[in-house]
Amino acid sequence: MEPIVAIVLVLIGYALGSAKLINEGNEALVERLGRYHRKLKPGLNFIVPLVDSIVMEDTTREQILDIKPQKVITKDNVYLEVDGVVNWKIMSMEKSFYKIDDIQISLANLVMVELRANIADRTLSETISSRNQMNQSLLQVLNQVSGEWGVEILRVDIQSITPPESVQRSMAEQQAAEIRKQAAITAAEGEREASIKRAEATKESIRILSDAITSKPETREILKYLVAQEQLEASHRLGASTNAKVVFLNQGISEGAFEQMIGDTVSTESNGNTSENGSV
Image 1: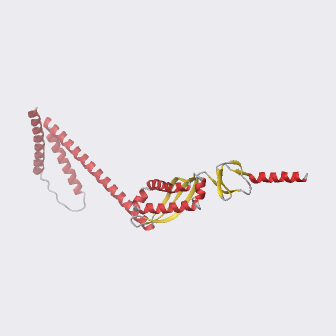
Image 2: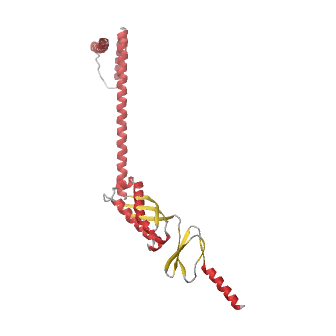
Image 3: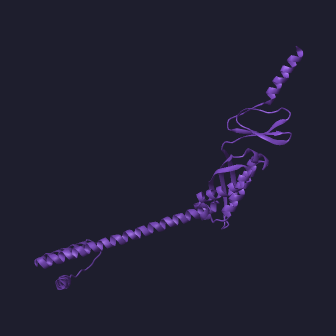
């Protein structure tokens, strides 16, 4: 009876020692007598005790590698502080274990080297404005190397690019100057458009006056009255000042200037009409 119990206990111990449970999303590598034997999938697996040994169990799910802030220098000799995040995934458990010693440290060093090299080829303005382009460039370069380690880089995200405080102040001043420049250009364009509108309104007013004078001669007397009234109001405004002054109004000069203006307007209008009739 005792030998049977001993055999049963040995079999139970053997079964317990040979059964290995691998969680979902993980894989494990088994070596037999010091050499790679096979890979264990998620679920219940059995190995040979004392002969087989599990040397590695790791996840095949997506992992995140946080890149600590790094001091880098741009093409135009500006020091920056850059950090980022890399999303990666083990595609071949065998390569990730046998091809490289520590996959996470190796990936971190590879990312930092390629990040410095990428920024060293760009100026400060190019670095700040082309973050997405750098992400794609780093992704392509990193996958060329990490593929030999059985790893795929899924995403590269440069999170922050921090210039020195002196550079930040210079950039803020440059941006403020650009905003003032654009405001001045906008104001000048607005004034130009307003001047054009005023000129067009004046032109239209003169045309209306010319048409009225041509069709109704009595309009001359009305205009003379309006001009005289305007001169009178101007004299009142001058007289309201506390300073002593003497104003002489030469009615003959005003009337002569008015007649000349009206005559030139009517003459221009008549010549235009004559030219149109001649062309017809």
